[in-house]
Structure formats: structure tokens, C-alpha cells
Length: 505
Image 1 (cartoon, rainbow, N blue to C red):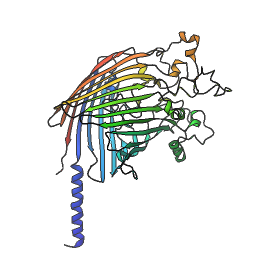
Image 2: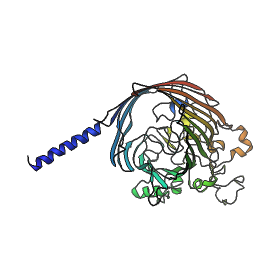
Image 3: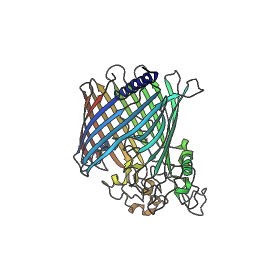
Image 4: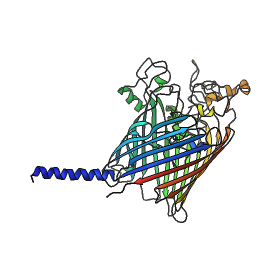
């Protein structure tokens, strides 16, 4: 046998072994999900934070098929992919869509993804939280390209005392919105202490920008490569023909600054996180005076007795850099606060809204961030006089208390979510627009506005999951009930999930 034939024979064996390894690491899934509401719309937690699978209608039936491969933890170079499709029938009709479809490559700590991939951004507890203020589980994945350090790794030159992680990505949003086909730039960066003490600290920032796209009047918003770098840095457009929000900063910029602690004790783990939103440079500069936040206290009792996880969250978004109007009238100095009733200019940040990108921080009509914040479409189903003033987000001033509990026993798990919220609408709605002060005027008493007085609302859900046949089959039954001054609704959810992991030879 010649050397060439020996080499070819060994190469075939190598490729066959790699092929076998790849396909021996696959997971196959079949999903079935049904949601039935006893009212015209489904309760909050049967729709929210389900990665956009469930429509807000009285009935949903979904069937899904998927195949995926995870990264291999013991290899420096690894590949992953996911292909999951769903068929959905609701009272609105039927549709077939790709839920996840992506390829991933990982070398040591660095991962690259391309496609639609379920993920969240912002530190929280996805299974028990109301939802991250950055990117929550409330939307179907958008198509994107992303490079990331997914897990904390040691920062060079710090002797392992500091760890880092982060993301940098570009995404494409849908055509059916006020500004068609905009781009989404997103990035995050985190630092975390890594000492032998029980308590460690972390700090991070997530920055997002909607940019580019096509205006309804036919204009194409700047979206060349040079504009992209200006978006990354949050700089204004170079085009002198742009007006208003274009010129302040190219695109709609928003994000969160966050910090917190993690602690490990003998019988439990503790995590406290604090997300603070910003909507513009004013909000970012006034970071230390920011009253708005999502605070979470997560206690995980995994040792001894029945494992249980408890989460308390407090959401407050009433301040938004203050009640003062964004800018003074023409000819009035910013130092003259008399027009603004003594408040600083630059307030009314109007979270998730933007004067140009009027569809706001949404994707396919769903809130990208925390779903307690309401769109016009959602609020108008239950309320009159919502008063959007050409903005899609009509309730972003919220004060809420939330509890999430999760416990496991043998092959059973239980989950409870309970949220109490006070809903104040928006500054624009309260004052007849962003620039006015209707709430300070005598005629305000005759002004009809749904959130003139804060509306109280409860969202409740309890569910149980049973694992059968060596965890290959999981069945879930849930019940949800919403009640309050916005609407009342109740409903049930039944789901089955079959998974088969192909074992290595």
C-alpha cells in the first residue's frame, strides 16, 4: 500500500470519526403547547416571556419540531446549531415560522453566532423574573450576527481577581413598523470581582441603538459603514439635511447600567441585581441620581431539604430624569426654570419611545424589554382614552412588586409568579404631549386620560411540570389569573415536550 493510500485511508477514518462525533451530540425535540383563555385575551404570564410563541388571543395551539447541538465544553474549538420551527393556530389564523435557526462557533472563551437565537441580555433570573429591562424573553429571536464572551473569564494582568464578559452584535428588525427595516446595534460589557471572600461584585452596561431604515415619506435614513461607527459611539449624523432626533444622535439609543453582588454560603446562594435604564445622554450623565430601576433579590436554597428558589423584584420607572419638559421654549434659557415649574430641562425620557422610531423598543409588536410596559395595541384592548401622541409605548411609568418561587421534588417542579403593579401611563399622555404642562393647568380636570389616576393590576400564575421516561418527556400544566383596574382574564396552559439526546458511541 502506497503512502498516498495510507494517508487517504487515515483521512477517511478521521472524517468518519468527526462525522460520528458531530451527529452523536444532537438533541431532537418535539413540542406541543395549548393556551386557552376564558376571556377574549390571554392572561399576562401565559403570553409574556414565552419568546413570542403565544399570541394574546383566547386560544393558541402550537406544534414545534427542533434539532440542536450544543458547544462541547471539553474542547477549545466547538460548533453548535439550532433549527426549530413551529406551526401555530390561533383565533387570528394560522402561521408557520422559524423560532430558532442559527450556527455557532466557539474558540476557547469567544463565541460567534449567526441567525435567530433565543437569548436575554441584562442580569436577572429568566424563569422567575418580570423580564430584563434590556432584552427579555418576551420576543421571538431576531436575525443577527454576534460575537460574545458568554461566561465570565479572567481578565489578563489581574491575577484572576477580575473577570469579564460581553457581547457585540448587529441585528435586522422587521419591515412592518413605522421606520421599515431598521438595524439594531447592541453591545454589553461586564466586570466581576473574583476573590476568595463569599461575596463578589459586578458592574456592567448594555447599549442598544435602532438606526437606519426607511421613513414613511420615502427617505432612507443614513445607514452606510461610516454611519455605523457613529452609531457605535453614539455620535450625531454628519448629514445637515436631517432634523430633530436624527441630529441629536444617529439612531434611537437606550440601554441599562447595572451592578450587583453574588454570595455563596453553606446552604444557599444569593444574588442581588440592580438594572438602571437610560434613554439618552442626559439619563446616562445623571446616572447617580437615577431613581428608576429593576432590583432583584434571588435566594437559591439548593442544599438540604427540598430545593427552592425565591425571587423578589421591585420595578420603578416613574422618574425618567424628572417631570420637566425635554427642552425650553425658543428664546428661553435652560437656566430659567420658571416655565418648567422649577424642574430641570431634559426630563420625560419616555422609556422605550422615540420621536423618529415610533414603533419604539419593540419587535413584531412585542416589547423587547420588560413586558409590564405596555404598547398602544395592548392597552387599547381594555382602555379608552389611551392618548398615544404618535408613540407606540403608552404605559412606561410603572411601580411594581413581584415574587417568583420555584421548587423541585423528585420528578416534579412547581413555579409561581405574582406581580402587583401601579400603572401611570406616560408623561406625554398626562400632559397632552411631551412639551406641555396640562397636568399643572386648571383645565386638567376635564382632560380625559386612561392613566390620569394610576391603575392597579395583578398578574398571577402557577404551574407544575412532571418529568417522565428518564426526563425524555415533560408535561406542564399552568393556570393564570389577572385582575385589576385595567382588565380581568383567566386561562390555562398545557404543554408536552419530548427530547431525545443521541449518546456518543
